[in-house]
Length: 89
Image (cartoon, rainbow, N blue to C red; front, top):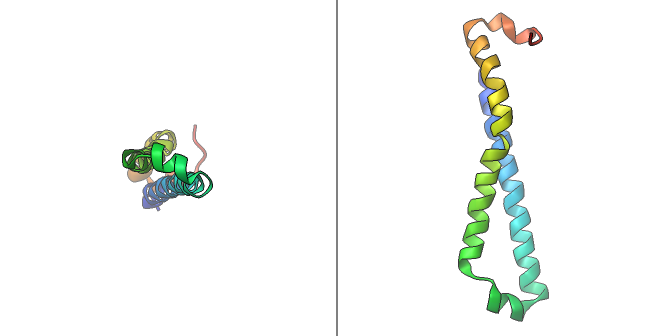
């Protein structure tokens, strides 16, 4: 049951990164279709690569605060599995 905390955080991290990545891809495709000449002149390859890197970094960092909150509960759970059902405090 304690492993659920870890796997759930990873799933949320990947979900957030995927959503941010799709948003960046949508904006890039919109600019290429609606403003083809402007995008050919101004959009560079490094911008696309930077958007992909940003999406994964933002996805990983977005789950960070939730992960830190669950660390103490996970440690207690590993020591005493009965703690899992109790409220914090």
